[in-house]
Amino acid sequence: MVFFLNTLIGFIALQHLGFLALEMFFWTQPLGQKIFKITPEFAQQSSALAANQGLYNGFLAAGLIWSLMTSDPNMGYQLKLFFTACVFVAGIYGWFTVSSTILYVQAFPALIALILTVLILKN
Image: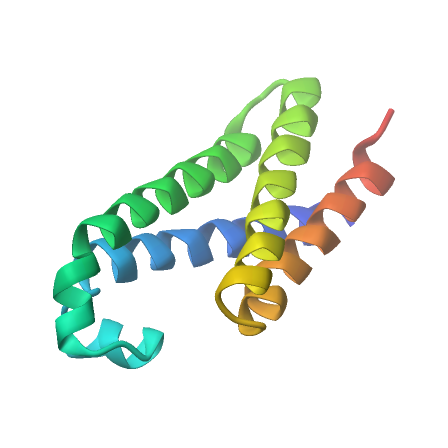
């Protein structure tokens, strides 16, 4: 089960690296505009905000990766709890403010990882 949990956390980290790339580098490109369903005008006007948002997604990914790489099991447990909770809260907020898709893409995987972290790793 630990392998499954770590794989799920790795997947969530990869998602957030993808969000970073989309928001920081592809926001004003056709790919970003298609994925986020935005116009070229809006993309240009909001590109600095999107890049900032992408940077925050990068921090979430870094924390999740850190939780997988630490050799201290207690520290890994705490990092997994904190960063999966952050992703879950961000997903719930995005669900209410942006799109219901965020609930399924971001919040649910984080909630599953958070619950598994508590069930599997709690000493």
